[in-house]
Length: 228
Image 1 (cartoon, one colour):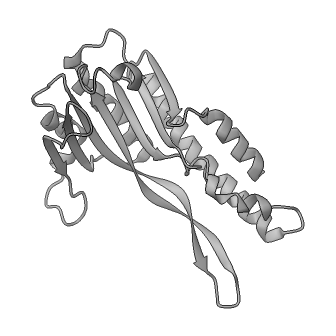
Image 2 (cartoon, rainbow, N blue to C red; image 1 turned 90 degrees about the vertical axis):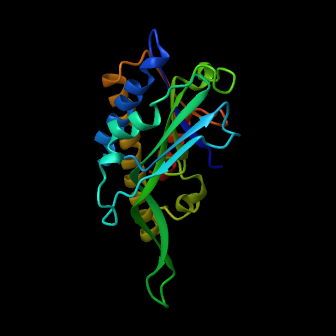
């Protein structure tokens, strides 16, 4: 079953007024790994995520935009955190391309085949005020990265690949090998970002975790073993 994937970050001797600089650092590490150097959207939530945002902006970072200066990481963070409040959370959306499967009909005579393509995925990087959601930063981290569902790294819904990957089914084996390759590429991006943050953002600790509490490493190993 698909599960939400998070990375929580804690900083040593953390002061709330240093949150903008910490956010800029983490967003930069994500940009280095993803190749996407612009913020896609910003939301600022008061008190808890059940409240409506007090600040929200969606950036247009394509040919329709006359200028993308506002979506530069440093500018987007500065605008959103111009007035820091300790009961607010500051959320920044960025994009990266992850390999995902989709089905395409090869011909009327040929059964549906699996086609893998890199597709944009949203990542939310959130900085927490110390009083937001009853000091939830103690569990969530000073900054939390929400990767969305873990399917690009686990792909629990594609168990049929295992059934088709025996040695007597050449096409099934090819599909399983392609799936394994692209899952590994997704995993490498995830690990590259995590290690880059650990090395360059001055954190004291980090935790990669899922909403269900199931250990991610065990799920990754189990999936890769089944696809091999």
